[in-house]
Image (cartoon, rainbow, N blue to C red; front, side):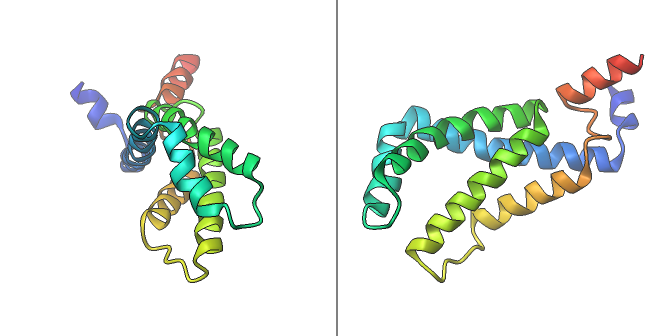
Amino acid sequence: MIQQWKSISDKGMAIFLGRWLLGLLFLLRGWYKVFEMTPQVHTDRVFIERFAETWIPEPALWSLGMSIPFIELIGGGLLCLGLFVRPVLAVFVGLLIITTYGHALLEPFFDIDGHTFTYAVLITFLLLAGRDEDSWSVEGWVESRKSD
């Protein structure tokens, strides 16, 4: 175990930390929305009630409201494990764009300093850092087995 700690680079450790922070944030948001709030309540409160008077059609609000909790839950778990990292990050980019648009639609001077900025920084870091030194992930483990 100590040899594994010594063998990981600083960049690899930073990738692991960023991946787990972002993964836990989304996993726990999704967990809350799926198992405590429920997707139905999430859809009603966050989408239908808030965006009913906008141009967005109600079926789109329903589909987004019902699917986002599961996307956050599953994507967060996959990110923590280090599986399908790049596709999950791409989906999270899409979620951030959708939620930022929604906030800005309701409040044109929306302050992005909250969770949106934090998530954007973590996603950007992980995309720029690449996958080559992410040895503490399922993808990294599989890749190391291929080279042995």
